Amino acid sequence: EDLYSLNEYKPPISKAKMTQITKSGIKAIKFYKHVVQSVEKFIQKCKPEYKVPGLYVIDSIVRQSRHQFGTEKDVFAPRFSKNIIATFQHLYRCPSDDKSKIVRVLNLWQKNAVFKSDIIQPLLDMAAGIPPPSVTPVMPSSAAPVNNTTPG
Image 1 (cartoon, rainbow, N blue to C red):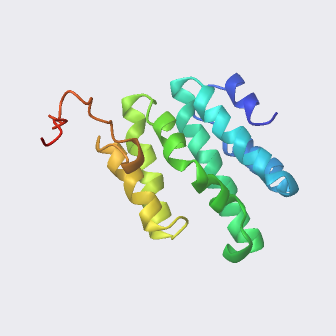
Image 2: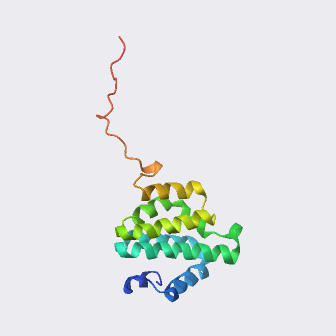
Image 3: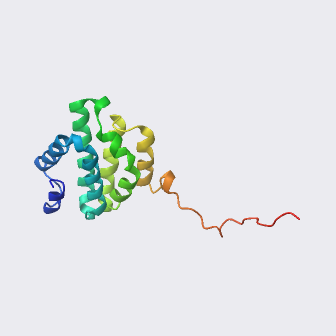
């Protein structure tokens, strides 16, 4: 609920609002899968100008969780990393001025080892317009000549 109330505010979102959403997320740690899913769904469905605030929610929840429970016990980062490529594909549908904010968060994550480098690198590549490995467009079969003749 708190998350979707973001839609009622004009970005940028206040620190107080962000704290409230983070607290709700952390408080619902027993339902962390639902929390993660809600944030992912929000990023997927929200208007472009709310994409970056959605990323800030991920950042805030993960950092708070790591701080409160310790890196070893944090359940949010591993869960967010499951669908992170898809999430970032939605995030990059933000206004072009906001892309640098996404990259800034990724750089901070890398610096503070919030996610492993091999998770962050493809996301940084996406910012540069390089498609992530799993979503590389498949060439139509007509593009590559296939030799179907049977020997004989």
